[in-house]
Length: 438
Image 1 (cartoon, rainbow, N blue to C red):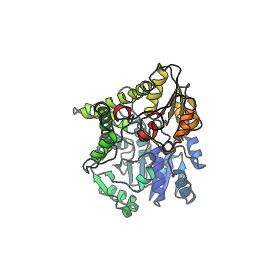
Image 2 (image 1 turned 30 degrees about the horizontal axis):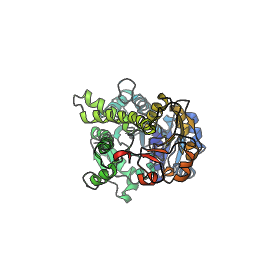
Image 3 (image 1 turned 90 degrees about the vertical axis):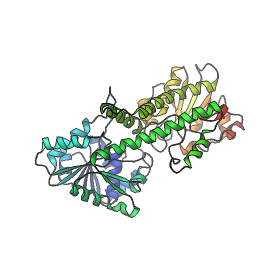
């Protein structure tokens, strides 16, 4: 099939590339000419394992191309995906749909013959109806069906998620659109991926509800971690104990410094605002967002308390800056709050991340120092803080680490080390959700 993907951000680039790998002819469109030029040269603007090889292979096969001309791409396409950004709107937290609406207007003017227009961007319930109205206003005679097909891609595992999804949600009641979307995703039938067809508003709501529920699980286990520290429990054992219940499951029950990234913070906020306007406030989700922001701020105080002396002039080594491993995404990363909290207390911050330092420089204060390795980061520091659970940090030479640190203090905000491994070597160890700092 002929596919046009409007937007070459994370969702658009991964989705378009994977569709081309299925054998479809895909054109990824973006208004940023320099970005399209870089993609044409094989330069991938995001860090996603395996994506560069997948792009090169499908470009070489002639199934994937990049362009700035939306009109030509849409005229030749049977399916047009809207995969532009929907950031939180300043002031009220609603999703900013200006890019989505602008894309809809251009698509309406360019469409040729029956065209399925699919919202891949994360959008509030009712956006598909808005897009349909915009298209009718711009081109009353256009033969277009508007479909919702939300994405469920985890950064760092997006290709696997696209090719082996838990489910594919498609919101449409148009039989022609249903036939097209079934054909588009037919290659996944070999993996027995279920196609869940729903009404369009329901599909839009599934995306927000999914992210809100996962954010709630993270926040729940983080609050349980606080309780464990007070009463003498071990949050990792609590998480395992409840996660073995198949009704609950083990995923998203890892205590840490709070959730971040491109989805959970903005999606929970947008869902919360939509619910408030609909007169059905989601008190549970409102609490989740409040608790998560408080937790990020509290992690900086935890580091200060671990050092036990006036912190001004001390140096803290921060390992991991991105909101999760296997991505360079810094959006709403807990590291931002932690670093700022330390700087506010007069602490010197030295940081290292395997791939995220270029993005970190754009959002962290200028006084942050960046190191070339985990060991260079630790050298001469009064405390080492593990913020992101990169695999590279899971097998550090602890004896070497102790010789490098000025004071042998480790604050492990991801619980990647057994306490005994460090305490037995003479470290002061502070984890999350363990009694007495164990």
